[in-house]
Image (cartoon, rainbow over all chains, first blue to last red):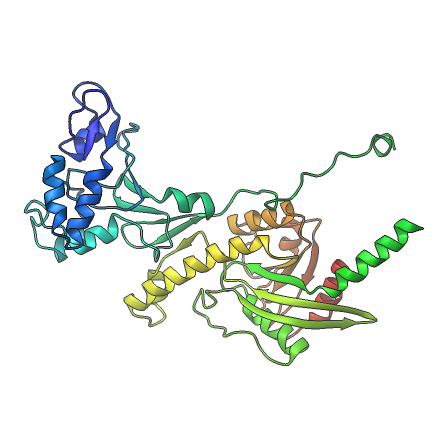
Length: 181
Length: 206
């Protein structure tokens, strides 16, 4: 669930996050408790649905540790989690493979969780969920080169910038005497 | 005098430790062919499989404690054959080699992991051979970025122009692209000029 940081209103669609809240704010806060409940429900945990209801929301996607970023029209609309109350548009491939309307009926397909979360087996640290929507593994990005996996399962690697060996000391300044020579 | 003795002792201890020599470069430039040639020359056994399909080497291959002996110079070294470094790994590039889509996607995943491993290994090597295909344009983002990274880490580097046995090889443009580096042109396939590479390694690391 993504709530407007200003008025607290829950975003009802991806487009609303793109365009901003009617109150004028473009910042939405992610509710992690509901996200965890959705993940639990997706894993077959019966408590999940009860927890979602208790928390007062219905979420359609799950994640664990990622950060979903919605980017559209150059606006910085963003959230700090991987779960939302809206259905992220599916790729053409998924539309063909999965039951139409499954998300609307409250059933979250397994492939949806695979796409909207990171596991230990993932080598990418950025996923393109759909055009303009990214999932970031912030921990992994801080340790490894940036690896992006797009909707077509093609990998892109950003090679690191030139940097000194970690832990190495900066070169000592030349002695005054040598400079004069 | 004391400084001289300390320096001599330091050098002695340094030589006892095996030097880790990493072989870097883009996919399909002949890194594993070169690694195999070096391993056969120094240890009588090859290192890994070679293939025309890009990203055949997808994990860092290591051959330890090989000894390079050259005119009174002895160097103990661990040779690390790195996966080819690429900025884009597209499974569709493998489909033309008769690989199924599922296997191609698996290969792409492993190849990407290999790129990450190779980049992370920059912190573990003592010296590097950077291999460039002499039949290709050397002005690529990968060549410039990785050589820059190695240079910035103060790691000794030898630029190796490979595939000089091919008719369209042009080593001059590699020299022009990366001036100031130790430069050797070889054919890992035929073994041409490998002795020159060994003496360059010896000079660089002695």
